[in-house]
Length: 335
View (cartoon, rainbow, N blue to C red):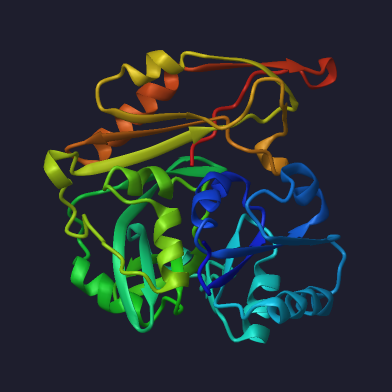
């Protein structure tokens, strides 16, 4: 039986549809989608679903949201995927509902100012309260990407980061606040909503948490249990975790993805995830393509966990049916 809560999902929920199916058993779900996403996934767990084209005006989306609110008051708006963040914000503002994840990516230009560490705080904010879930370092491995790694001790005190996040994290938000350490203190470089493909899911899972459930707790007002904020691994788990992935810089169809079991057998590897299905089309990362493989690994230090994740990736080998004019070697891109 569904409750009186009504949550509108904006964007492409493909990666979290299984979780939404479970959550939809006790909460009314509506979906505002792009036409291709609705055609791809169908109505799924949503009681109602409405789609518009990419060139739809902002007021068209807001009008559609009002129609949904007429059926039942909307208690929350959840933005998922990498598109329609502005739409999610407009809809939440129009309906007077809390918003999770629909935050744009402002940059303060602080990176060029200092050689200090580039850090990211994974945080949850609700009703004036915030909890730091992870403190990560983005380690550059390639010109077009970086590796996401959770470290133990930093030169920045975690309590200082928590206090600082209170002023830099929007209410009702689950995601990342990126910052650098400058001589004058912490400087924000961006605010990014949580996305299922950014590595956060794997990092949180090693701490006994699910990002989808955390997002849902913000929307429904449920209590949130946050663990692992002191940098130590719970129940004897690893103190540090790293997540690494690679994609392709050429286009083609994925015909084979070997070595996944070999990667799982590497000591310290926690999770090996194929992100593309065999037979699916693969686009270059530089053209909006997706990563092919993602691995989470643990260790006593961030650098050790990162080394293990890279070792696991080295055991895997994708094969593309490359169009002759685009033939070339795969370029492993780390994030």
